[in-house]
Amino acid sequence: MDRSLILGLLIFLTLLAMPFALPLIGQGYLTGLIIKAMLLAIAAISLDLLIGHGGLVSLGHAAFVALGAYAAAIALQSGIENILVLLLITLALTGFVALITGSLALRTTGVYFLMITLAFGQMAYFTLTSLAAYGGDDGLTLWSLATLFGSNVVQKGNGLYFIVLGTLLASWWFVNRMSQSRFGRVLRAARDNPERTEVMGYSVTRYRLVAYVIAAMIAGVSGLLVMQHAEFVSPALAAWQRSGDLIVVVVLGGLATRNGAILGAFFLVIVEELLGSFIHEWRLIYGPLLVFMVLFAKGGLSDLLTSKRRGNQVA
Amino acid sequence: MSTTLLLILCLNGLQYGMLLFLISAGLTLVFGVMGFINLAHGVQYMVGAYLLFAFTGLTGNFMLSVLLSLLCALAFGLLLEFFVFRHLYTRSHLDQVLATFGIIIFLNELAKVVFGPTTLSIALPEFLAGSIQLTEQLKYPIYRLVTIGVGLLVAIGLFITVSYTRIGMLIRAGATTPEMVSALGVNIQRLFMIVFGVGAMLAGFAGVIAAPIYAVEPGMGDNMLIVAFVVIIIGGIGSVGGAFIAALLVGLIDTLGRSLATEILSFVFNPSFANQIGPALASMLIYVLMAAILIFRPRGLLPAKGVA
Image (cartoon, rainbow over all chains, first blue to last red; front, side, top):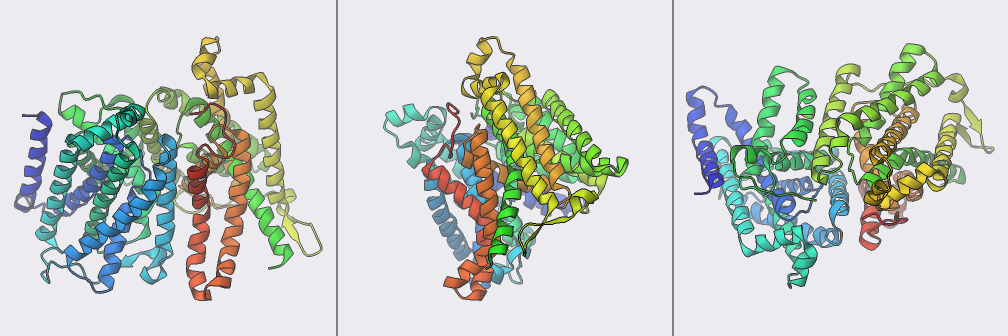
């Protein structure tokens, strides 16, 4: 069996056991931290579909997380409480916005794509700050949360934990299946040589647009869960630095690898927590750490853990 | 809306545009010549501002501090080039984004540790602090006029250097076909280092100029970086002339937009609605402009020839 698949199964088994194991050693509060890492991982998995498999470096992906969170929060405020309905609303809105911005952004490539996604991200950010009825700059605190047909299992504690874990598993499985399918191969072919792929009869733009919309919708779902976990949404979710963080997670974990995004997300959250517990100014260490990782650990974390080298470079 | 107000807004826009040009000039050259995405360019701007703060505190002499800050900004840029950036030129854009993102995080935090998280301000020397009577009703701060003048001088200097000198010729050639320039026996490594150093110094200079007008605080370079990217995309990557025009355009549109958007909107919509979306729309204007330019003129207004 593929080593990365074993690693993936190990990760999920560990995550499944955590809510039962952690209270035994008196560290139950850590589940909150794991939820945070899993939410980051869901968004990162979707971004890896774009960057790793599609070669499309987006610097505006956090906007879709924020859109998902806001769509759910606003629907919740207007009385829709069922989380499944909220999910549909989130998927519809992020998918629709991605369809429009994507078809415009995909007219460009490379650095220009990075810049135009940044522009759309900033537009989303400023749009959210202008929603005076929903908190504007300060964000919106939610007094009630989403329910599952009236039951509050999806709100707190282990219920929420398993919902997030399930979503992570689903997006991990879905993106992996997709990347191994014909669709994924065309996407990677278009990354490595768009002209040849076009000549072979595939519409490169159409494939990329589908990937862009799917990635946005998954990011939107993570946004919905971010709202449910934090009980608060704010425009800061869409700040460009958040998109930068997502890129860090994806690249640190290893591009277009099965578990890279999850490893990267946990690495980031653990480093933040660990360094933060030693010194308050943990960023003084984290910054240079990033530089060293780029200079010396090229293939990302998942390459260090699974010995098989994969040559996935994005120009 | 009086003419006086409009004139003030235009002057403010010009002044902001000049500042943007100083930052963008280095960014566009580094990007165009080396194909290097330097997110850390924004913190060079912050470094300039903090250097000025430190030196005015030490020496008490404004002009001397400006000079010292410029030299230190140059040295700092060269150091970064030598230790980090040099090793990234041949790497993918993604690696460059990541490493320079790390440098941003580090320097922002360092500024917070050394100078504290609060906003600092720098007093202007007397001969720059006053205002000047432009028309009967209009008094305008001398310092802002000086900023516009200095920006113009730098623009002219850069234009002459890039268009008419040997080094400028090499820079333009390097932006088009670096392999060929290198094959002809030019030390491309040294050329890169010079371009990088000058770019860092110009960004630092922008920070020095901005320090007495705007707030000096950690992270002040982040937003400027994003706007500078907007400028070089609109102007065309690698083109100093394009950066100049785009910087003024962005400076004017942003400044006028922020002051007029609400008023213009209230002609069409009811006032409370206009008040609500006006500011957001104004902040968005330059990004809309950039997106539109990318869609209709993907290489920018004045693209440098041959830059991919």
